[in-house]
Every structure is written in C-alpha cells, then in structure tokens.
Amino acid sequence: MRNAFIDELVVLARSNPQIALIVGDLGWSVVEPFADEFPDRFLNAGVAEQNMTSMAAGMASEGYHVFTYSIANFPTFRCAEQIRNDVDYHKLPVTVVAVGGGVAYGNLGYSHHAVQDYALMRSLPNMLIASPGDPMEVRACLRYLVSNPQPSYLRLGKAGEPQYHNEVPVISPGEWVILDKGQSSNTFLTTGATLQLAMEAKQKLRDYCDHGVASLPLWGMRYKSMISEMVGGFERVHILEDHFQDGGFGSWVVEGLMSQPELVQRISANHLSRDVYDIVAKSDTLWKRGLSNL
Image (cartoon, rainbow, N blue to C red; front, top):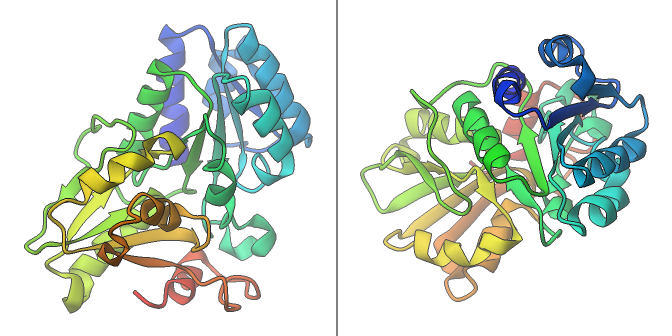
C-alpha cells in the first residue's frame, strides 16, 4: 500500500503544485520519488512529530495540502493535541498518513501497533478517515482527498497486500464498495487491510463461503447516519477490523444502528486478552490470535 501511496501522490503532485509531504525521519526507500521530483515541497521534520503536525497546519493555512507520513502510532498518539487543535479545529487540509495500521509491524511489538488509532481519530468532528483495503483503494482515497481537501487520516497497511480491484474504484464517504455480492443475506464489512481476512475467510471457511464482501474506505463522525440505509436487506453484517473493539470501526457501525444492533457481529482484536499486548510475532500470527473468533 505504501508504494501505491507514494506513486499516486507523485502523479497528483505533478498537476497540483500545492501538495506537500513532510516525514518524521521515516519512510526512506519509499518517499524518495516524491522528494527527488519535488524537493521544494518535501521536508524531513526529524523525530519531532508534534512539530511536524503544527508545521503542516501552518503550511495548510497558507494554501498547501500537506501530507504527514510516519509509522502509524507516531503521527497519531504522539501528537494528538496538535491534530485536535491545529488541524481539526481549524478544518485545515492536512492528511495524516499512518503506515502499518493494526499489527502490520508485528515484529516490533506493542509500541508499534496501531490498535487504538480509530478510537482517537474518529472522535474528531472534522476528521475524514480513509482506510483503503488494497492498493487500488489507496489510489481512490488519495484522489478523493486531493479533490476534497480537509482534515483527514489515511491509514495504510505496510507492503505486499493483495490487490482485489481490477481498476481504481470511485468512492465516497459512507458508501460501501461491493467486491462480492455473495449468495446469502450475510456480508462482511471491512475497513482497511482486513479486507484480505474477509476474502480469505470466504474462500477457506465453509461457514462464510456464501457471504458477500464489502469495503468502506471513507468514513467518519459525519457519515454515521448513512449506516442504517446501507445495511438494508442484510440479515447479518460481520464487521472485520484490526483494532480493539472499544472505540473502533465496529463501534462506529453499531452506534449508527442503535435501533438494530442485532444485525452486527463484530470481529476485532481482543483487548481483554494478552493476544496482542504480550507477544511479538509476525502480523499474520497476531491476526490469527487476536481475531481468533473468525
């Protein structure tokens, strides 16, 4: 996903001179295509994420659409106050790019897991969450964000994620992208890289082979009311997310369905166990442990 991100950002920056990229001394071997082609719009803020975010807000107030880039836990929790006060409050076009959502950096341990980031970012009233499920959805999210500049959070996987779309889909906030209609009234609804888990469950697990699969790449506080309409006709919606259950994507969906909570089954990282906290392992292993009820 991160390679698709930088490739698409370079393409967009060629026709939009206001796009800028700031990194927190991370992203090397990925960000060079942008840095080499647009050196006057590329900055390395160093290991100073709070400064990086406030700098981005200042540039955005002067007309730039700024993308800040780092491993998922650093540009979010480390500078939550700057995102809240400098970016979201002023409705500035800053996109916080978080690489390695969920447990994608599994081998680096809990300090590098992004399993509470949705809870933080979705509580900001002006923040649009962009959580693509494959490289094509990454490109779709970027095209939407550049065409509709606003406070936004782009949550990426790491690398090597499967591609499920044959072409870049057209997406809008709150609207599901249907990848498989399925043969029953049950469907998976995913956001982000857990699209892969849904596709694999459908292929490998008998209980889910007839399920549909949908992705929701763009969502946030302002679009919660759309959920009720989107679930119409489904008997059961299985929510998949690589995030703790409390405050995550599934919670957001359930909050939008207060009158129909029985429609939703949430499958998420189990925050009541030590499955995510206390072991260091590859992301695939953590997914299997933390999402063991799938």
